[in-house]
Structures are given as structure tokens and as C-alpha cells.
Image 1 (cartoon, rainbow, N blue to C red):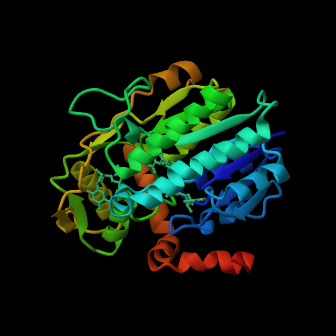
Image 2: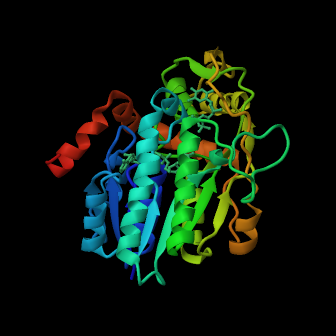
Image 3: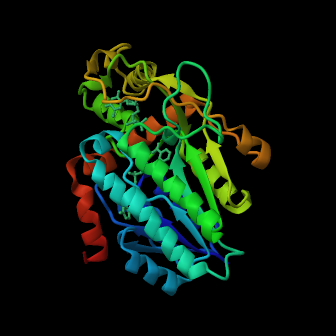
Length: 350
Ligand code: NAD
Ligand code: TYD
């Protein structure tokens, strides 16, 4: 019997992770602590909100008193720390909110875990969900391994790198049983339409311009979100304490090729003439400090725990587009801001 704290469970990856743990482990108690920022949406979890082993708590990971209180009340044996500010472009306009949530918030959750678990660390796991962006930017060749030196270049990646360091510091200094994974770019259902793939899907549906930064030559390594949370489940249960695991899809796409693939598939699905959506592509000013290429070497995870991605990209993208087309209401609610009212309607309090 585990009692698990998931932070940021109302976000994109957090909601898939929460769903997986609540449905796959009915004997675990799962508490989802989320601040419900613009990126947190309880509609992402509608299908599991009534499950007896699931509880939502609105709150902030930077609030040490609140996190301490939750540890005292629920006697957590595991933490899956997902809460973060996650969008690079927002980190460029507002870096300090990234420092607050990603660095101070992680430190607060670590501190609460340390206080609660000191003297009884053996059966506990503090799992920190991180990103490959901490490794910086690759040239045309090579891959990030777990041994690649950190070289973050955006306020987002620098704040995530800081949080990773803090997690390792709690392991080395206090013996906190930590595990870290660094994953490449995710895509799939419930992805907030400020990120490239859902933004383009939304704009293609509405025949709006598709903004491609610079020349569209930057490369990302895309992984279907359910493959990511499957890897987290595996590492949480079977990974070694104190270790880091890279997670990635071996699936590199330049942004421009990716957007063209989205256009191709969506023209077919929407019954539009071939080439229609490509006309929406608009090259815009590049992102400041735009990392050229990310690519993960996930050999360690494959060799040690047998994980490989389950989906080919064309199939994953097709599933993702189908989900957005079948859930236009979700997309409309998110883009109109209506989803922000859901908490009030559902929980009658704020
Ligand atoms: P997201 O922005 O979709 O969701 C973040 C969630 O955290 C939201 O529900 C938000 O309300 C919550 N949150 C933000 N600040 C909080 C605070 N102070 N207290 C409590 N909750 C707070 O992010 P995501 O894309 O699902 O990413 C989740 C995690 O995975 C992040 O740590 C991110 O760095 C990491 N990650 C993301 C990707 C990716 O491609 N999206 C890839 C690798 C790693
Ligand atoms: P994004 O989805 O923001 O993820 P990240 O920056 O964390 O990799 O962006 C993916 C890539 O797409 C990145 O190279 C920036 C680029 N991009 C665009 O070209 N246009 C856009 O409108 C956005 C949001 C991103």
C-alpha cells in the first residue's frame, strides 16, 4: 500500500501520470496537489475524479506549511514531483516565476519529504520529473546521455537544472531516496495549446497562421506522453535510488518537417485538398537563445528496465490529432479560458 503525492497532476504530463497511477494501482492512495495555474485543468482528470483512491488538493508547492500538512495527514510513501512552470517562451518574459515554482517549489517539497521521512527512508521514493533541456543544445551530431554535463540556456531549463541539483543534494546530504528522469519533448492529448503541436492542431482546425520560429530548422525528439508516464511508472517501481534515467523517443524532427506532417495528416482527416494547410505556415521571429537540437540516448533505460517507446511517430500524431478533433470542446474551453471556471463549478470553493 502506497500513499502517493503527485504535484502538478492537473497539467499535461501530470494528468496522464495521475490517471495511470489511480487506475493501475487501486490499492494506492493518490493525492494530487496542484495550484491550477493557467496550465492546470481539472477537466483533464474528469474521468477519474470520483475514484475512491484519488483526491485533489488545490495548493502551491512553494507553500512549505501546506506541503508539510499534507505529509502529516497522508503519510506519503512516494512523491512524483511534476509541478513546474514549463513553457520556454513564458520563461523568457517572466523568469522569476520559474525560479519560484521550479527551484523554490522543488526545495520545499524536498524539505517536507526529508522532515517526514528522516529515520524511515527505506521504503520511500522521491521521484523528480525533469527535462532533457537541462543538457543544453546539441549540434547536428550526438545525443544526451545521463553523463552529459548540464548546460541550460533558457530561464526554464536553468530553473529545471537547479531543481535537479537540489534533488541530488538532498540525496547526497540527507540520504533522501530520490530518482530523476530527464525526458525529451512530449506530445499527446491534454497538451496545452501554447506548445508547438497542439497550437498547430488548433490553428489548422481554425485555418489560422502556423507560426514557425526562425527557419524551422530546430530539432526536437518527440515522445508520446503515455510512453513517458509508462517509463516513470517503471522507474518509480524498479529504478535504482540515486540514479538518473534519460527518456526519449529516438524520434527527431525539424520543426518545419513536423508542422508539414501535421498539415498533411490534418488535410486528409478534415477532407481538405492536399497542400491546403501548408499555406498557413508563417515564418516568424526566432525565439531568443533558441536551442538548436535535443536528442536523447535512452539506452540505460532500455538495458536496465526494458523500456522502449510503444508508438511510431506518425501513429502517435494521428492518435493525437484524432483526440483533438474528438475533443474540440476541451480545446475551445482552454483557448477561451472557460476551463478556469471548472474548479468553482466542481468544488464550489476557491
Ligand atoms: P504543464 O505546464 O502542462 O503542467 C504543470 C502543472 O503544474 C499545472 O497543472 C500547474 O497548475 C501546476 N503548477 C504550476 N505551478 C505550481 C505550483 N507552484 N504549485 C503547484 N502546482 C503548480 O507541464 P507539463 O508539460 O505537464 O510538464 C510537467 C513536468 O514535466 C514539468 O516538471 C516539466 O518540466 C517536465 N517535462 C515536460 C516535458 C514536456 O514536453 N512537456 C518534457 C520533459 C519534462
Ligand atoms: P515547444 O513546444 O515550446 O517546446 P520546447 O521549446 O520546450 O522544445 O517548442 C517546440 C519547438 O517548436 C521549439 O524549437 C520552438 C518551436 N516553436 C515554433 O516554431 N513555433 C511556436 O509557435 C512554438 C510554440 C514553438
